[in-house]
Image (cartoon, rainbow, N blue to C red; front, side, top):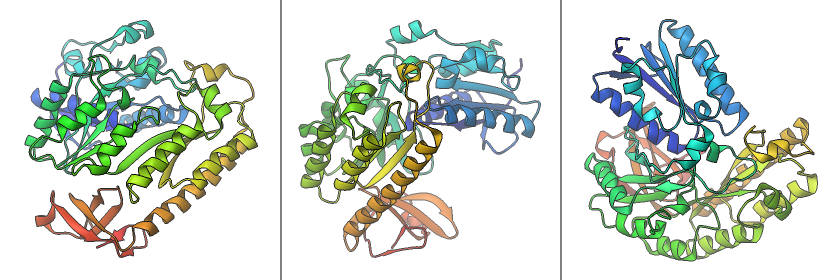
Length: 427
């Protein structure tokens, strides 16, 4: 196979996937390929897949069919979590030419050169893998997703990710700082720390997330550090207290709740009960009243009754949560919950999802009202749409203003005074 010159990438799933896609694409550019938009006609399409839900897998297949219609002669490579867990299924899918698991996807250029059409580690091999592949995203948005951790040791009963990515592991603080300095050298002013379970950062090296944060704050030119999703049992008082006094680490927290029912949390094999989550939220808001606190919630887990759901609804309703990510449970064949009885009816899932989405909208409105007539720092991004430019405050509130090329990648203090029709603050 003679390597083609035009390659396009598309990413599904988490921010970690986006960071890894960026690193894979850089290897193509370094080998002489032209990187083009996924909507254009390419010779090679690379899809970095997600398997967190059944719907995520369906969307991957839809993307494959779409690009094959776009260019029937194109070579399609599907890599990542879906490829790792179900390679045989994908190899039989006629529109896929190359299937690579999570370990091998970083060597995609080599596989193309050597005519390999598939390579993936078995679940046993993945679980024994102690290697860490660093990655970060670089685009024109002035913010970078920096991968600091991979894998997970928790094995929650609804989740297949440990089987796709293996056990928790990370690089050393020293090597992570090298990656961060590379990012800053390219002009990025904000780094978002990402991984599967970033609260476990450093455990295989006798280091910790807090120690990493302390060292990252010392990097010249790095002005904003944002923490990705972190488990409530790993978000310590020390981390919260330090963020409250930090000039660089932003007051934005993404904390998975999953369920407000202790009975459901135990069935999910979560490492905390509802009071731990509540305590984390209240501690944050006591120290940082305008901090943003997002929560993940799963509805429709096997055995979830209306009473269990109302436990979830009520804890969110009564806590100063800023917004929600609502996920509808779907069986993952590798996860234990797929074998559990008492599946929730589709109609009940739909109803509960709609109710939580409405509650999430209500919580966001309350959060925005709390921030009205307050001053915040905004990092302006380079994207331009209808003569406007966008940015995010330190506490993750979207802001828009008239496009000004001189503002791109600068941080400006603004007053939040009025919302436009899209629910975005105009300044």
